[in-house]
Image 1: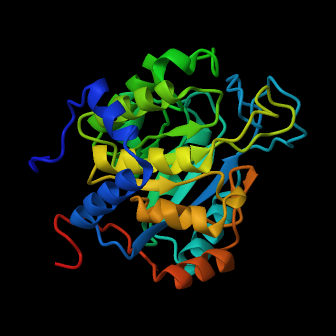
Image 2: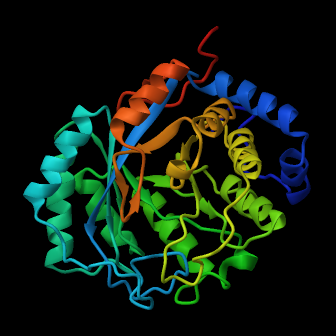
Length: 330
C-alpha cells in the first residue's frame, strides 16, 4: 500500500466531511478516484451459493437463517460437492469470476463438514474461479487450511458501527468479528468485509462503519455494501429501507476512502431501479452479485444484469485481476 492516496489513518472528522459533501460533488470526486485506480467499464460479477441453510444459533435481527426467528425458511444440511461444482460451472458460464459459498454457522468446527468444504474449495479453485467462503468465525489454523485448499477470499462483514452493533446482534461481539478478519489476514487470504445499510442505524453509524473499514490495514480487498432486505419473521421486518441517495453516498465515500478495493453493490439490488444502480457504478461500485439468489433473498436474474451492463457499456471483469494503479483512459 505504497500509493500516497491509500491511507489507513482516516479520522472521523475526515470521513464525516467526505460523507457530507454535496451529493453531486461527492459522486464526482468518487468517480475520479475510481477511474484513477480501476477500469471504469469493468464490473466483477460474483455468485453466492448457500451450501448450508438455516438453523444458525446467532440472533442477527436481519437474518432469515437465525434459529431464533420463525421465517418459514426450510433448513438443510451441507449440500453435496457435486451440486456445488455444477452451480460453480453455471456461474462461470454466466460471466462470474468469483464463486462464494455461504454456510449458516456461528463458527467453523473441525469436523467432516469442514473437510468437505475444503474439498469444494479445491474443486472450484481448479475451475479458474476466485473462491470465496463465508462460514462464520474461524481460527487462524482453520484459515490456513482454507488457504492451502485454494481459498482466495473470506467474507466476514462488520454489518454496522460498533456502537449500534449490540442493537442488531447480541450473540457475538464486534471484537469477535475483527478477530476473525485478523485470522484471515494472517493466513494470507484476501478479506471481503463490508456492512448492511437500513438496520435502524443513524448517519453517524454509517460514518463510523466506513471509518472502521477504511482504517483496517490493509484495506479489505472487497467491500460489500448491502441494503437491508426485510425478511418477514425477523425483528427488522417492517424497517424502513435506506434512502437511495444515502446508499449511493455510502458507496461513494467507501470508494474515496478505499481506492484500490472492489466496492460491491450487494443485497437489495432487486428493489433498486436501474438508474440507482447506474449511480452506484458512477460513484465507484465495481462489483455485484449475479444469479437469482443471495443465500436466501432474491436477486436480479442474469439476463436482467446483462441488459443493464449493455445499457451502461459495462463488461464483466476477469478472475484474479488486481486493481489498476492508473486511469483506464490514460
